Image (cartoon, rainbow over all chains, first blue to last red; front, top):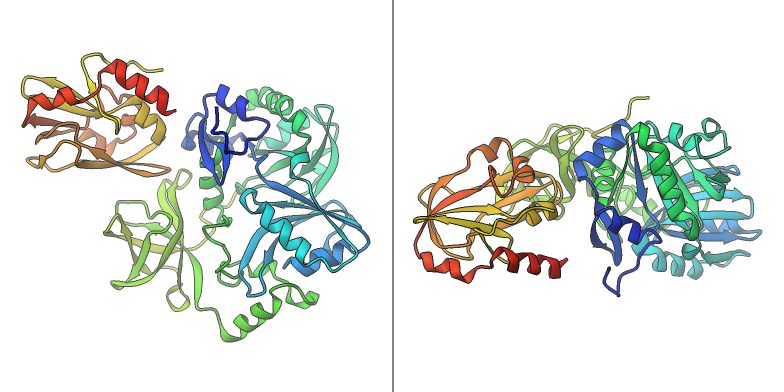
Length: 366
Length: 129
């Protein structure tokens, strides 16, 4: 049984019955692994993995000025979206630091659906409400949705056996409302693994049945239930940011290499002024990929040295199951943030050699 | 579930020791490797090092985290399991057997009595999880 203070998803007892190792993840009792991180990681890269990501938050924005509100609080340009299209974006503070990174879905002109990080959902909701000076309604919808992520090269084949929706027609970063196993589902071709795949938003009461049916349908294809451990190694290889690691209130999109989700030309938005100022002054630090040369893993929070001097810190680091070497991301002063630079990472007080490398570490074959 | 040999003694930090004469073979428990997950490095002490019961003996690193290994008993490192350096994953496969970590020449054989029996250890990890 999970500790009483922890939040649980509708699949909690299913994970426990599968023998998952459960951890406290930002106040949620979540599966970190089932068969093992490396095994699950390879399943997602080569076949398919099924993740319970019901801890993620959902916020709906409705009303005639829904788009204006979204465009005022988020960095990317929501006016470029068409019905059924999704977009990676960010909520910023006035000073340009991240409130959260989010997925914006345009359901229709007067309805947007945001998927936000679990541990940030209350903060995000308050932030949206605070800046809502538009004719729009901000609705906290997390308890109405469970979320399952089916990821991997076989994801489409597996899901197609369970839905009448023509999945090939749902392009990357588009979504459609349909049915999966007869249950209403928002089917989005998005993910956090660097693979093709789908994220399904369904009623909490349907989550267990869908989970079981997807695992059964995927069995001939080599599907495996996958936990947050594999989700982390997969997203790191694909260089996708994790809130609290690569991004937080002290980091701006320029520094995090997320300038591509900032559209300065779209009009005013929260944080824009600070971003313009920083762009004019020039950024001082930048997120860089590294690979370990010496023996060791440069992990989150470890100090990074360059020529013996403190230069930055590791935001995420792990053995990479796909590349079979130890990789990570770190912040470095911009003048040191070039590929091929030798670094030392303090691994439990011992300097271990690393080298900066191009990112993403992994890109799926298309 | 794994078998916890009755002839071994166990620590709260999830090491085991098996004593034969004045030599104690030390390893990590099945439960420990399961908690750690896929193990990628095992760091063992140098031969001849004197270690004290409860003090750091080395470390083990998985995909997810690094964790210290503590000496279940005091003694001198008499042998180390070199095979783990090149094949750390053995620790996931056979933690109570082939993947032992070190052998200690016991400084104080009586210390073993401070440790848990297999039954006590299984109760302990049952309560912990």
